[in-house]
Amino acid sequence: MTTSRSAARSPAQADNTLPPDASKLEASLAAVELAIAALGHTLTQKDIAAVEAASTALHETMRGAMTQFAQVARRGKMPMALRTRFALASGQIAAQREALYRATALVEQNLEILIPRPMAETSVYSASGASQRGPGRMIAAS
Image 1 (cartoon, helix red, strand yellow):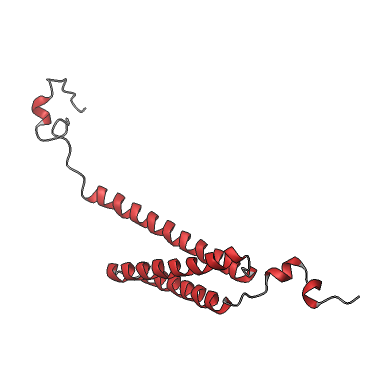
Image 2 (cartoon, rainbow, N blue to C red; image 1 turned 90 degrees about the vertical axis):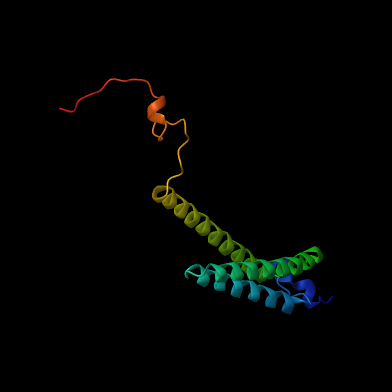
């Protein structure tokens, strides 16, 4: 009794066989990785318009890749190497997003220190607060 080569493969090897549209997956994943690198580079610059453009390009590229990956995954023929690269790219995007959130929070904190928000008119420390405050004890510094 003879066995065919495909029957002799282990399930792990069968999972790594490339689907017919693997070149499209490879190209879309490479485009996502390139867009991630471009966004990472623009985040180091001081050009907000470039960051916005790179972010939009990454979003569109990622959307296209997700569509292609979902179509292939429904057929159950996702190569493990591409799946791993896609997960790595998703992790890089999450790391960039987290770094951007942290930088934004830091900028907001610094702005709050440099330019404090106006205090409410009823605050003791506002311009009209002293007149609303009752007489208090005066403590002399010794």
